[in-house]
Amino acid sequence: MSVANTDVPDPVLTMGSDCPVREVLDRVGDKWSVLIVVLLGQRTHRFSELHRSIDGISQRMLTLTLRALVRDGLVERTAHATVPPRVEYELTELGRTLLVPLTALDRWAVEHRNDIRAARERYDNERA
Image (cartoon, rainbow, N blue to C red):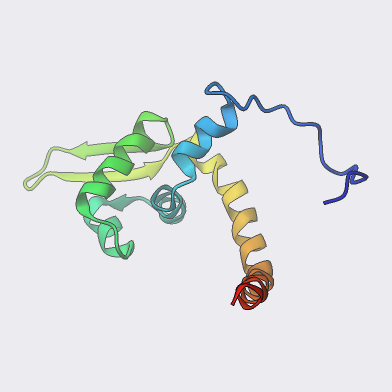
């Protein structure tokens, strides 16, 4: 990007430990959180449905990630007093607002996937 690019706003980020972007990215920047939010954006899911739908996630990691998303107010956990107990997860109103930037990121990734792959190949070939 050139210095003359005027489409980029001045940074409002504090790069220290109190950076709001860093704080949010710590939660939604990992692949498990993003996948969970996207799935819950479709509908309410039970724990077992989420576990089956997310290839490669362990039960422990799913539990930890869901707990963190609930703590951050992005996901609501509802336990039903049935036998066996039934627990459902759904996005909160705040969590649903996260779907907007995630959808934009998904569109960007699909649009530029081949460009990135080509750049990686050029880079790797230059280093070989």
